[in-house]
Image 1: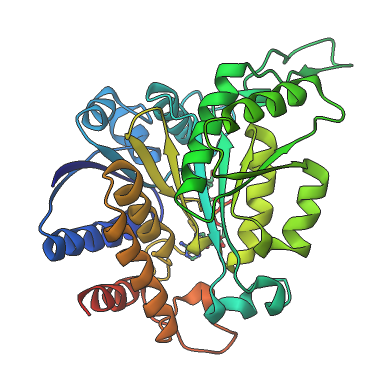
Image 2 (image 1 turned 120 degrees about the vertical axis):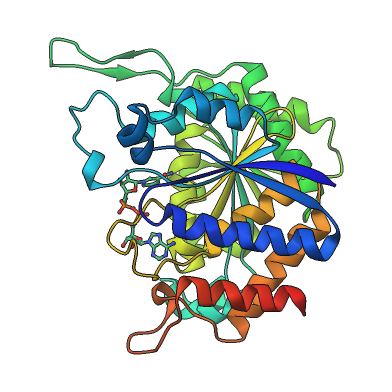
Length: 355
Ligand code: NAD
């Protein structure tokens, strides 16, 4: 197949990790007979410096002409003045909004080779392989709010409509169908009216996916279960704020921020793929960045935007093989152990792909 991918390296370690993911995608194309072209565009702090806008119109156009976006990370101390009128994250939010990317997918997997890095007992981590589906463009982060009152009170509103919940629920049920066919929908239906609507809408969508086992989990209990029985979860579906908090909680199970990919999807196949970590200015330019999260984001791109499931699995397996062979970047070694550079790690993944 032929595909065009917009590459937005961004700031800090962004360019270091996106270049590695592109190398992996090029290898996959070569091995599987596909043709991928990569169109690079500016985003974040570098775009502010060069063009005065964190997501210039040229960048949006490049994305519109592509099948998917691969993003590094944006931001850094140079652009962190809270009073600045143009900020790196604005561009990212604009791109999500522009393409109506309402479903954020974050797979969290534990790797036996890295069990010593996670804060839980290794026996609890065994078999952890879950997928968070978080609603990304609605809920309390976007509901009516009072931002400047008399200073004595303020409010934000959790507001969801049936169509908003239904469309993200469809994404979650479809994902569950391709996995272990279990969906846990997270809510607070015992207290909040918006969450009773959430539960009712999810139950309605479930009628189309009778092969998927659905459970409703209250958010407070879910926070606990993620630590006490993480391996019991397959797909978790949550609203914007609950999903934000719980997916960060679950991310510690993988052992390092450098391991975790994400996908933001809309109603079609177009999507934005990025590691969950930021631009890591503390290690930028030192060859210490772990490229795994971005390489695994490229695997999600193959799966969700290009429909290349076998190729996606090939990449995920190659990362596992690299880790099993002992390849480690600086963030995932035990104290005192030696580690390899960003590009050396990728070379190991590329070697595993060829094998
Ligand atoms: P961060 O994720 O950049 O870094 C947190 C810690 O994790 C650092 O010690 C860093 O070295 C380490 N780390 C992160 N990714 C790593 C990787 N791939 N390999 C090895 N170590 C890694 O978070 P932060 O320091 O809070 O933020 C730095 C900048 O990134 C800020 O400007 C922030 O606004 C921005 N940010 C951007 C995004 C995004 O682009 N989506 C997300 C989060 C933060």
